[in-house]
View 1: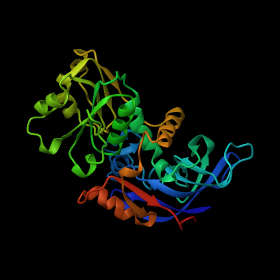
View 2: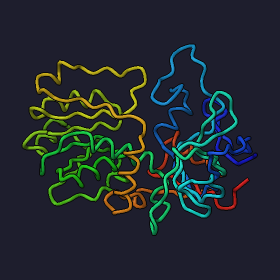
View 3: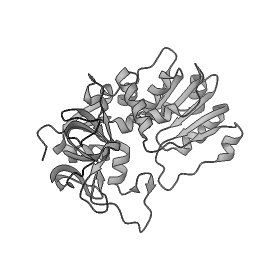
Length: 336
């Protein structure tokens, strides 16, 4: 079977081309992709050659995982479902990764025809705009960040980063009753944060004294600190403002520099959380919050592009010469 896909051929090399897709087995679904969402941070770090797998950074001498069908999240319509499957033909579903014919990287996301086991497929609730579920894995990363720490009503949670994960972590913490302080440096992005009456935004690009700015925004200290950008420097700067028994969540990619001073946290008896990946229970909880409107996706999508324009989308991500946040790829008309 053949399909169209977004392929990383090498460092900095993105093409939209035909790829081989394995024939479906008896337990596989076949899904016609309609939308997929780019994971800006993870996918661009693979494209730069910074990872060999998942959260594993590349090191000198490592064989880089090229070529690969990039991505890990999409929504589409079921074309074929196995007998006795809970899924049915014509149903809208979310699919994480699906099978592709590359020997070293046999799974991918941005592909027009998904051949996928049921464990990687999620039925969309009736009436949900499928675009809201196009980035469900990444939305779940944000949910995982916001759901891990203990949160007392009204406690201050600081979220570092105004990217997609930062927004969804902040939304999750808001839903759980926290007072959220979002630290970002891109007005185009952090302006999309729907702040409550007690929430705050701190523009890192306009702050001369971070400690003073955080002290003013967090007069009672920080109960929860979520780092979505992978900056130990910022965590260390913010650590003195942590309350006793605080929670620190580290979700950014550090490459080979992922070192944190445990003794620094010990003085506050802080708990360190290191969430990664996705799990079915978390995906289902995330989907329920998306369907309820507690987690919002549509307002964070700034670009809708045909899948064939993916090379231009990644060029925009790598060069960072223009504003962007959520980049949705549309697959209408691209099935085989």
